[in-house]
Length: 265
Image 1: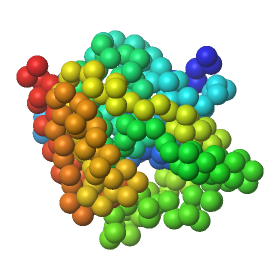
Image 2 (image 1 turned 120 degrees about the vertical axis):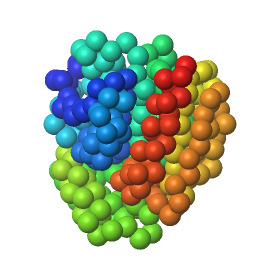
Image 3 (image 1 turned 90 degrees about the vertical axis):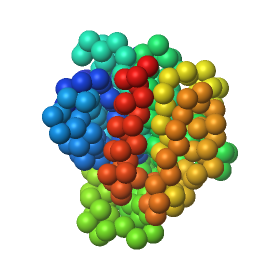
């Protein structure tokens, strides 16, 4: 395995470590509100750690074949470098897939689990074919313009997002490299079903889903909540896939509730 150089990591606060893994094809910038607000007024409730994942933001892609297990290994290395044995691991969309891959390989390091706008089931053949179509297209064009052509930013948000939010998400999408987009699509397409992993993970967990999420809908969130031994499900009204951006106050409240449950264990 050829590890990329150390990823760009943004963090804030002092307290129990909370790692938040970003969605495809964004970067750790999507967690700006969470880094600012989740640690609490005194900044002592949590240390919020938000790394860029392989190929996105300032993180290098490396030369390995696509696999989310490698992204999970990157996270383990990041925790090792900081001397962190256990953390609350969370992710949204692709970040959720990586969080589940981490839980599969390093369950002893998971103190709590946050899964937002994601799913534990594997892709259908149709979904895998669509991911390969996009991966092939961005590499052939050497451009991620196809993501804009297919209105990815609009699809990731609810039915009536603020124009400023659409612009913010579109900007992050445009910053992604074709190579990272293709790698991530193929890695996500190859991921296994993780419901068995969740069933064996006896830690406090939070599942968050936007009421209007059409990418990973409520039914998928319910499957994860039912599989986890100790999960709380939060459905955020009137928002779509990127609930942390559309409804940060409600999202952050659910995360802080999870941190309190972890602290009581």
